Amino acid sequence: MTDATSTPSRRAVMTSAVGLAAAATAGSAQASDQMAQATARSTNVSVAKRGVYDTVPLRQEAINVCAIQSRVRGVEIKNLKQSMAEGLKHASQLINHAQGIVDEWGGERIWGAKQDLICMHEFPIQGFRPWNRKELNKIAFELPGPEVDAIAQLAKKHGCYIAFGCYAKEKDWPDHVINMSVIVGPKGDIVSKQWKARNILGLFGEGALIGTTIYDVLDRFVEMYGWDATLPIARTDIGNIAMTAVGGEPMLYQALALKGAEIMILSVTGGNNPDSAIAAARASRVYTVGVGNSVSFDNPGFSEAAGSKDEGTVVVDPRGVPLARSANHHEDYVSARVGIADFRKTRRFPELPMALFLPVFQQYEPKFTPNTFLQKLPADYREAGEIVRAKMNAK
Image 1 (cartoon, one colour):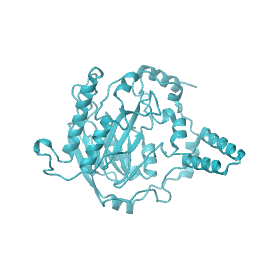
Image 2 (cartoon, one colour):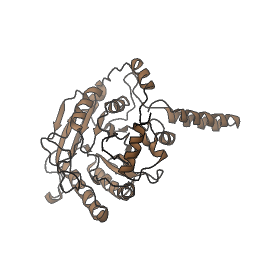
Image 3 (cartoon, helix red, strand yellow):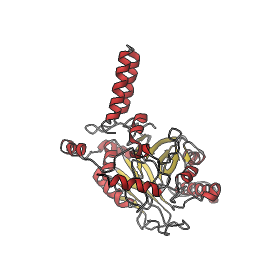
Image 4 (cartoon, one colour):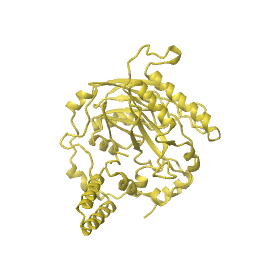
């Protein structure tokens, strides 16, 4: 991980203090400096200050942004190799077609403009089913790994960035399966890995999601990567990009914007992404892409609609005005021109009266506290639901 927010936890502060004291006792100036630098990495957060925020130089004045409204079809555990290959092939074809390049037409762009950023939803390759942990570990992607590498090579081929969601594994987190947003770039590499911030609670009846989010392992995550990585921003040469599969979370979207996000991608499958995107763009004053899924056939346990709807995918400007949106619920492409350089020059942040808000935020106590998956990794949705209900009903 490279990119994190907020004030440090008591645990992080105490860890840093003990380390600094040990270094001082040992009389090692070098060790003390190293510990101070580590503490700074842990607590520093890259956030806008008086309208100025971290960026890298842009490669061009304006970019083309394309959102792909595609199906959600869960891979088959009993036929994993073939069904995963089919999912990857389908997603790859959609990416090529978004770029106006079709193998059956000779492999050259016949019409349409080159897309600089292609956005896909939460699970365009693996799909979704209520898998247990053992099954999820079988379908989760290695990062890097063959499936992600295949998408990265398409980004290199087309000279673009591609943002998509997936279930993923990290070697430092054995047995965890992470709901991950991945951005690959024109060099054919992974530009950013952005963990899902948290899961929505109480949405699945007796069950609950078992994919690991940052909130589920917050203390260890911060110790490993620092606070800045908890709300990551990919600072690229086409703009600052944030991607999240958290739905209906306006304060999260606002925080990402305050950290310098210029393009925000909302990727929830089965969610209300167009409505959230319009509201988030207007409130946070950033370009926002709401990527919905299309109708999805032959996915056991789900209707063909799968939460899709007409106008379910949208690209929105910082005023909350849709620049482009899908007209139907089928697989489709939505593309718009974004003047990213002009936006960067003229951007105005919402003036948030933090002196009024902070006493409330700092003293509010939620029922559901972080670090649940540091205590126990649920084996399936039912066990996760039991953990959620126990914590939500705790006095």
